[in-house]
Length: 197
Length: 182
Image 1 (cartoon, rainbow over the protein chains, first blue to last red):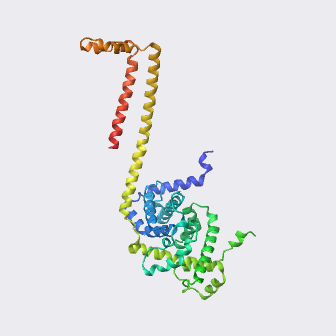
Image 2: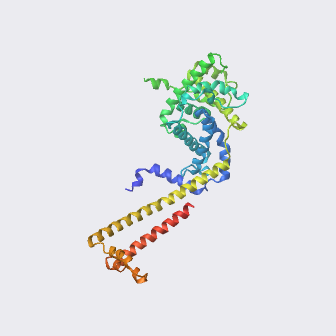
Image 3: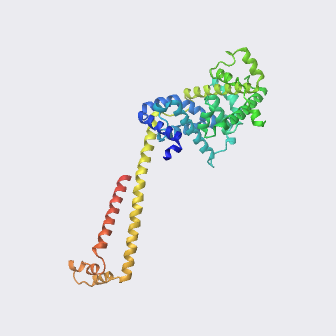
């Protein structure tokens, strides 16, 4: 029996992806410019809220795009679509964030001042600063990422598992716990005299 | 029933709440019946509260980026950086076999040199006689420079040709690498 029959699904999927990539030309600079225009701000928002450090978010965002363009297995916009490309991009950014936090010289997330969790902006943008900033500060890095991907980006559990490199079945429980924790924090904050949620 | 499974009992109306929040219709454009349900269901209440806060935060953060508070850089610059990195990676991948070839040539050279020294040690270092005779030559004559002892003492073409070929190969490799770096 040929060895290919041992893993038919994996091979079929690989073949399908290879065929679809071969049918479409690689991304050119104009296609990339369009993709960048549509995806850079959501990616920056994710990075800045997850890291709490706007300059770091800018650096990691740029590095994410460069790695996306250099990656041999990055999804093609034409073949696999923008959703797959975005997921791949968010995955790169998540890995870069993780690498940054793992570096021994990096400041602990607990040491980051509270004001970093607020995004600089106008008065009209003070709502999320006042409401979410202090609560996010008390969450773990992974919880912030999970919550942002689920509730700000609207990704499914399966997509979050892909982005974060976690097992899909564990996402539901992790997300449930994180949501309960931040909801409690938001309510406590509200009870202490914050704004009405 | 374990604690996890008890905690994970999700409400069947979570999807409805989630969709309303995502569309920005919560709580104004929501049926009063669903609003009543959310006020009594903790899972739905948490979801509405958290999803609403995150949706607002996303909108405001993106608006802040559009207002110019983020230095996002241009797509063209990133494209150029990626091209440069790709090119460097390609050059590096081409250079790797060349370094391997260089190491291989060095090893071959060393083996030849060790073998030669071994043979010379066994037969006596006859070519040293030629070096000793050189200052004694009274006049500078081409004949006096001819290493007569050299060919007579084991420096056969069988040895000289491979050594010369290896040296030529190494020299060529060195010139190529120097040109590539420039």
